[in-house]
Image 1 (cartoon, rainbow, N blue to C red):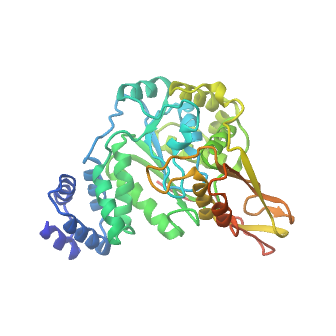
Image 2 (cartoon, rainbow, N blue to C red):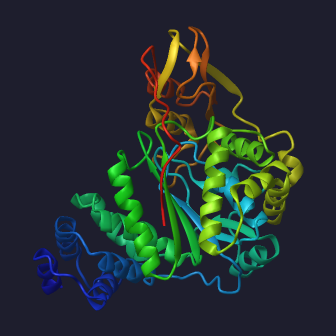
Length: 424
């Protein structure tokens, strides 16, 4: 191992065998943490070539279980780097199934200020987020969509390396970030995938250059490992849609699936669907995809999906129940809504009990925030900016987080694009 540390310290490219040895030793415990940490620091300083990144990713993916989706047709997946109000998976999964693709994926839970798809789905009464392997494949074949919690041991090497990166100052290395994300996507088995790389105040990537570098690294890594890849860079300088919070986001996703025009959520879902279908060789125009939202086909697929996983479609007819108490935040002046501190909004929902400080925390799925204005809205003093749904817990701290989240002014306003770039 010391030879491999020195090799990387001097900027010499690792072979595939080098990286397989490092990953194997990290999982088995044969390589001590201090040597892994030294190698991570050398990698952080020297970087990796595209082929090194791809080989590292493959070795990490192979370190644990690999989902076998070979019995399924047109398997597609989507990954978001995380944001606030990002419920696109709830819209995209049934929409893609309605287009003839198969969505069979394991999703994560929320941690920090970003929500998790599984938590949102579990706000639907009786939804089963754990299925046997046979039931998982059968549902994918019969319905075209199945999403469960991550029950398998996918890419355990990533958990090992990430834990060390977190305490050694080596998190911010683009090859290590890309391999961390893509190792789990490779292990998840889908042949074609689209990456939604978020950029802005509520995203991990705060500027466009970093977002572009990460997107390129992940697309290249996927292609070198035999996947059909697409990526977009999308805005996270304000929450996506109007609803933030688990049950609230399910309600908004259902509204979008019923054809209601929630502009940014609808547009982003159609763009992501188009890109991953194109990667999979399924020819659908954006207009054809939009029609499946408007004519109820995607919503019917959503109902078939949640019923297959234990829920009743009738439980969704009037929307999911939200927390019983509300508090409104009003504009203190007139003018144009210049910006929303997206991170502060996400943290406020967490403080109300809708997000986790630790993985073991129990969520209050009904709490959340509903925006009444988006960036660029013209406001009068006293207009409602946002409505907070709560059960008293954490309200004062949440309101403190939201106190200065919205900036209203008279400056000229340049609208930000929802999608900055597309990569293939």
